[in-house]
Length: 613
Image (cartoon, rainbow, N blue to C red; front, side):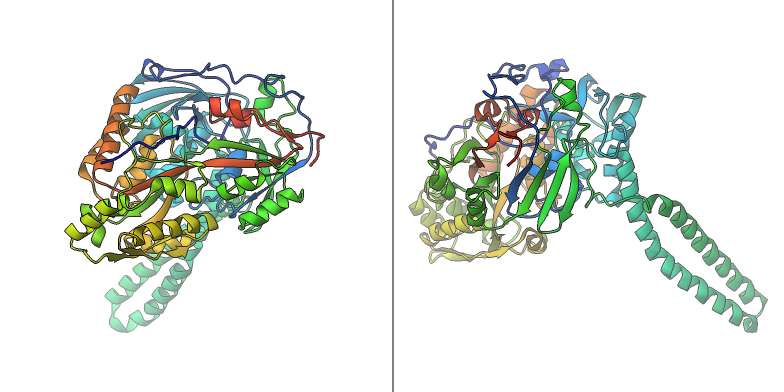
């Protein structure tokens, strides 16, 4: 039996990505989507928004627990999407219900039929390197992602794409292999982050030059060996000489071809920089400096198109943004209190420490990062649904939220948050029932308990909730002693399926196909065969193809129920985001942010009261 979690209601999810210009439903299919707020209500910059006018100037100082990682959004890992979203902008943004309805770099779109979309792009937008954002740059980027040599982790999301046809300088026609219901949501996600064509070409040239160098070295050795054999061939007669000469000519031709390609590529590569370290988007800020593992510093983009489009050319207001890596949350807070930082994200424990501090402003808003436990269905005790049920019923989710998150989280029933358009409202969080858990373990053949192996993320917040889980499981006879690893260290044991139970997070639950496909398609990197729910796979495929919103919604309701009934994983909670700033930090209207969702944050940049920290 499962019960309803009391007192947890989502208003909106959190993600700081791009900017909000207008809310336009561009086809009859998407016009049926729910909208509970005035689509134009976000367009407020006067006293309704903030009592004092914005002021230009100053470097805003923030902190992050980890370094940003790679700065090409299509390469893994990216660890700081907050900073990335200041440098890149997307074609489309999600609204407060996580529906891709907000035009941004894509000005409009219309379904001509189930497999064809006509899209008009915004004019007058330039990348940080001065190159123009247009149809040609969009087409090149999508083809770059689809090229296996470029190692884009987002490539599988574009699999339904057949081709992109350029209709005009700012108009493209998308052609799909089959109906693609997740298209708009995909363009509102990572593949929709627009990157300079010139930067992508240079990045590819650098990679190709390195690849050709690796081929040229053995090719030279092969030619040398062929010439040595040619010199020796005379002793074996004319036929051997002919064969040896032929091999020399083949080796020479192969090497000459490689060297010619290297020369052509090198001309482009010599003037290029790798995107993993030098991002080139269209966003408010450009990269000024970076020290791996220590900090990144961004500087104001004076040519940012949005501010100019609404006659607010001072946008963005900060001269720059510096994000320093400070792993310890207590040190981050101490730096904020000492005036060395201007804003940070607090953990739940710290909220109580600062909520009444007169020198600090605190804003709390829901955050759709899913905290959950991954189960290995492929081998080990969790193959048995009774064991999966026992683990799930052994966890007191309400106590977990209050004990480790101090009430600053919403209990999860499945993968989509309550405010998400794809969430099944009939599902309730799994009930805490330790006696049932013990009974199920005995029925599964573990009357004296069992031991589970696994790992969790090596950051203080993850350690706290993992240790709480360990105690709850121990109460029913389950021993779980996870190894705490960094993100890169988790990859190998996960790929080898060397675990029973893993502490996990999914950072942004937006396009419903993405989390469903990544976690529950057996061929996904993030599943790797650890589970194979045939009903769920069929529903994922159906949801990916369906273009009617109401029909898609029912498919995802059914998908959540299929996962829920099979105890596919252990979904725990969605933590709130808690932003703390000093009093000099102006312009964050949390009520409007909650109301209008993604994009609002960057359409209303913040500033310092006096133009400096």
